[in-house]
Image 1 (spheres, one colour):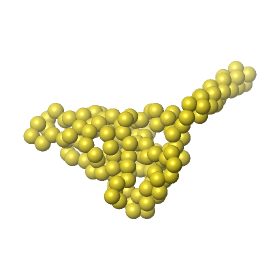
Image 2 (cartoon, rainbow, N blue to C red):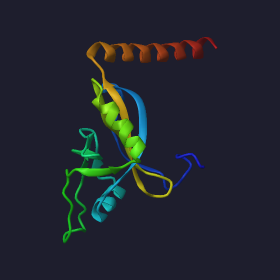
Image 3 (cartoon, rainbow, N blue to C red):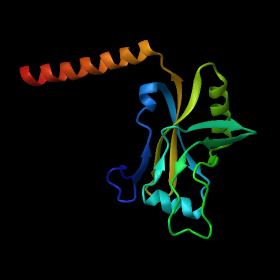
Image 4 (cartoon, rainbow, N blue to C red):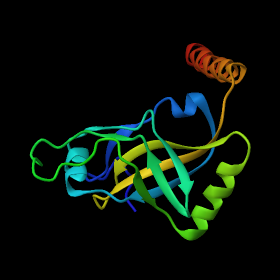
Length: 158
């Protein structure tokens, strides 16, 4: 299979950059989305925001809540609701694992990346993460700074 960056159909629509800063991501999973036609066209134009969204397991189904997909201008007859709940498609086994993980203390289902895969189908990558405290964030930042400093030293001294 071709690498995502090499494939012309692969396109990142929206990314939640704060996900890895605010959560310690343990695992991630790719899932499909149930979308209307105008939502897909809006996504192809890049009109989406998943920064404030989250995923929940409700009544045996996985839902994406509070994700914003901008209205598509040419769809005046049948427009879509901008912040509606959208159903996510995963297997029953993965759904059971996600439900179990989200019930644990401090665990959350965080949308990380919304993209079109190599076949041109909209996919969402969800991370299973535990919320970081202020001290954890400082520790992560200190590690990142040390890695940068170490790389600079190695580059200078060969």
